[in-house]
Length: 55
Image 1 (cartoon, rainbow, N blue to C red):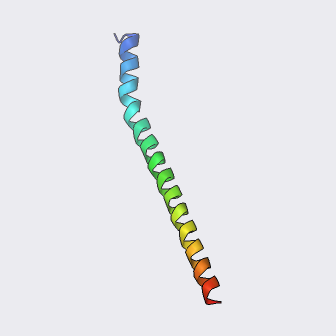
Image 2 (tube, rainbow, N blue to C red; image 1 turned 60 degrees about the horizontal axis):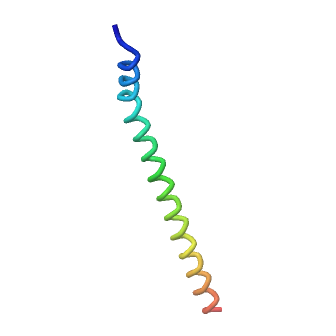
Image 3 (cartoon, helix red, strand yellow; image 1 turned 30 degrees about the vertical axis):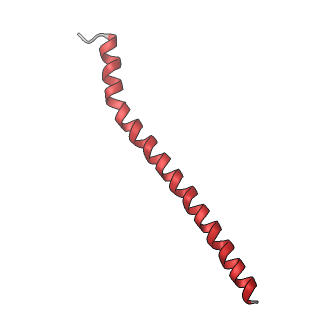
């Protein structure tokens, strides 16, 4: 017979890795997205400045 505590522990062991991996993936994806947005903005300003200097 499985007790309530054992079921709870089994559920924690069963679902925690999945939740951890999904959370970590989301954090990394969001971080990379904002990093690329920042790089794009810097490059855009650089191109704009270069264009204005030439013309």
